[in-house]
View (cartoon, rainbow, N blue to C red):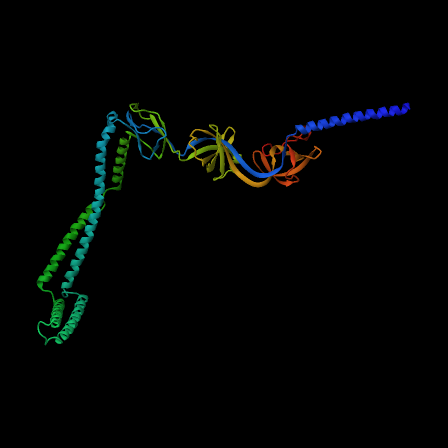
Length: 468
């Protein structure tokens, strides 16, 4: 009986100890599970980015400074006012200008007159060339006429033409005579007879004129005609010689170097006169006015700033390890410290071909154009930039924090149904700042991965941001 009691007591003690051990294990496992940070493997969009910070600048920017001394007479613009290219923004009082600028007005008149005289000589040269060509043609015509006088009044072609005209006129006369014969016996006041007679008279006149022209052409010129032809040749030759001498005098026109020098002088004087004004170099917006009317200024005094705010750019520097991932046209997402809770779109417009060595390595300048224009974005603001270098849809994603290296392979730790951790081999494709694409292995959608496995499960991490 005592022996049985001892057995019962022993079994009870073992049961109590076992329960306590099991309870402690369960509590430890529960505590460990509660300490795990987990995430579920799912499909989604992977956006790979290259991050940087940069400064906003306008597409064009110009600080306008005075080129001479004087007193500001008028400022015609104010901050935020749109201006067009070459618009006068401010001017100095004329009576406050240095003497050389005031005298430039008279010098400009003289310089322009000298330039016009040089250019006029080129026009005169062209007119002389035309006169010479006309005189040459007149001389050739006179010579041809004189030579024809030696062999007859007209060339054979002219005679043939006149003979043909006479034949046609004679045929018309014969027809008219036949037509009139039909009405010849009628009364003189008969309209048909009168019409036939009119036709006959006109036909006889044409035939007589054609015959006279033909006979004249067939005849030899008389002494008066020859003398007139020789006189025309003499006159044409004299006019040709005069035109030739005038052409020789003017043919070279003005020296091109003289014209260039005169144009340069005009430009220089005009520039001196423009010292009185500040003009917008391009279409844009006035962003600063640092002077006021009545101020006395000297050369180099900056008074007005103009920016082309129609295009806003951000300049960033990208490390050489990432520069070849960036291409012109890449989408850019950016935010600004000065504008809270607002994201803007942009695009890469320029990538430097040459890098710059800095203390941290070699960087390349990249220019980004803001697509979402907003008046809140101002030149000089700091921008946080994410350049989208790759975008994948509907891929299996795992947080980078879950990826570890073990025995030279990438693994993730999956929590099984019992709460224990199983190492699962994975193959990584593209990666972003937070996620990696799973392209191989046994990991599947819906698996729960541990982001912070216990120390005994934590060899070095294998995500893209924490690689060995």
